Length: 76
Image (cartoon, rainbow, N blue to C red):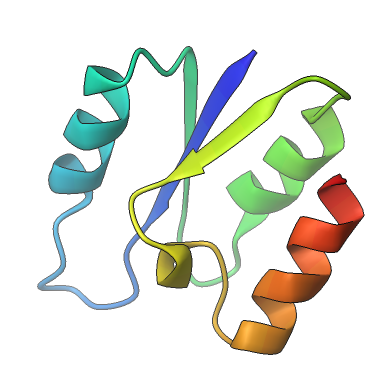
């Protein structure tokens, strides 16, 4: 399954820009998150071998490089 993840960290950032870009790739499922990121946790729980995760930019996936690397390694 193709899974997209989008999040905004500032009020002025636009979630629609991210979700539109993901939809144009044919993403089947898009999760979003706010400060507490419950949607990220939900997406990670549902992620299965063979699934593909797409993000608009890597910084949307995590708040630090360390967190992004840990998350990517956990999905492999």
